[in-house]
Amino acid sequence: MSETRHNWTKEEILAIYNKPLMELLYDAATTHRKYHDPNTVQVSTLLSIKTGGCPEDCGYCPQAARYHTDIEGNDLMSVQQVKAQALRAKSSGSSRVCMGAAWRNVKDGPEFDQVLEMVRTINKLDMEVCCTLGMITENQAKRLAEAGLYAYNHNLDTSEDYYKDVISTRAFEDRLETIDNVRKTNVTVCSGGIIGMGEKVEDRAGMLVALASLNPQPESVPINALVAVEGTPMEDIEPIPIWEMIRMVATTRIVMPKTQVRLSAGRTEMSREGQAMCFFAGANSIFAGDKLLTTPNPDVNEDMEMFKLLGLNPQKAFVKAPQPETVEASESVLQPLGEKPKWTRPGHKIERNENAKATSKLVSKD
Image 1 (tube, one colour):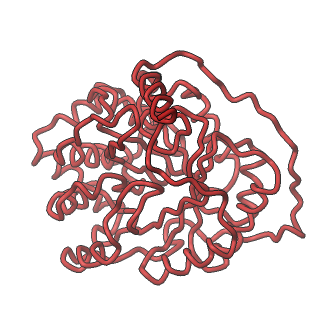
Image 2 (cartoon, rainbow, N blue to C red):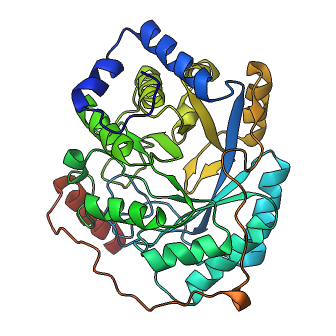
């Protein structure tokens, strides 16, 4: 059961997910100990380097320009600002900085050049650098790799079947194409999703089928619990019970045994006991800091207290993969191609997304 497979079926994964909880936990913990140090957890800091104004219509996201939320937008941060944040994160125990920009896709030009310089700067601090910037082309992925990028995050979000009920402005296939472009470099892949968006358990299994079918499987899989934000289409969805998160973490661990499973958004709703069970079930990565892009997250000091209580140690940088070399901009052999890829716009309507958009217009008029 613990060997890496790429041919999992939805039925097999559902059978694992629905096992008696104690049996599921035992199987997941056994698998976890075969491939990982159970007392070590990788700690990442997520930094929103460009907030708000996103043209997408993701039903869970407060950064979508079409919804009325209390998110304060900001233009792209400076390299100096990012370096200061990275040093603060390193001093608090983080080994990785993940930079997120509210873009649909990367566009060649001064802003992307600035992000590349951020990557170079953080890599020189001997920290792992991750970016989540939307869809990227093969050449853009190679330029990020040349700058010293360690990981690229591009979540599948949910199953291919349920995806069309969450997002209408991009296609599931575009997510896979971006991951494929990253795989053409030495950059590791971080890809997971969100549970608690109104999907069925079958959709959670379907997402794991898609992730596990990738060869190689993602080096990191974030499992997020929906944080319902007022003004978004999913604002009225109740938080999922902790047991569902534990089952999802455990199932992910069994299906993707060598992957680092990240306990991501939603931890503010989880007790320390609940998080401890997730770690026992195979989670071995978290985001630290008081905010995940725009949603609340436990204070880093609280996390360190929890680590001490549970006997957990932060993972050092570059344990799972070697540190990339950084090529300076002046020595780069790669040039921007000025690409204008035609990323898909499916164009179908999602009723709750349209309702939230209409409500936002009414609020704006007032």
